[in-house]
Length: 204
Ligand SMILES: [Fe+2]
Image 1 (cartoon, rainbow, N blue to C red):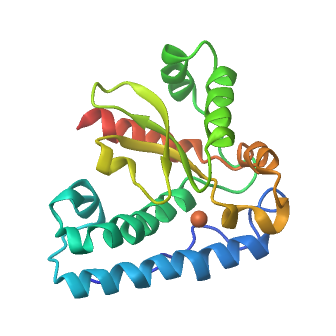
Image 2 (cartoon, rainbow, N blue to C red; image 1 turned 90 degrees about the vertical axis):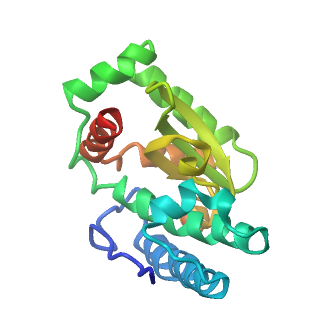
């Protein structure tokens, strides 16, 4: 199985002014493309039979140790970026529904409290990685962070929302001001997609 770089679900400039066109193009066509190409090379060299990227990442500990780190890095990089792009939508095109707000407010004191904890996790992550809203094994909502390209699927979580806090995700526009990128991100969250993912994860 060969993976392909997915087409973005919006125009390159659709996330302006929160996420600039230049960053979107480089992030997608250089970084995401490189993960895609390196994943395909690793699969070919390891002679892996792959049914889906999800299966590969859930069962990555079964991969020959000689190739495992490459699959974690590039398979995670491929999946995490697919997931990231699909988590975004042009400004104000998507608001959290009452159903999603109610699910969030079962866990956090308010929707704002959830956003504050998610933002703090993203801001506090040391080095390269991701912050995630996930459903854990007990079907409870949880906020986690993962280092480099580790995917929550490998850790037994169902991912629902993510923000990329690698410097390549924000440095062109925001330089070292990660907090500004995180603040801008909240204008771009595709809440309809988050709710779809939550419903799918709850039904499993
Ligand atoms: Fe990235």
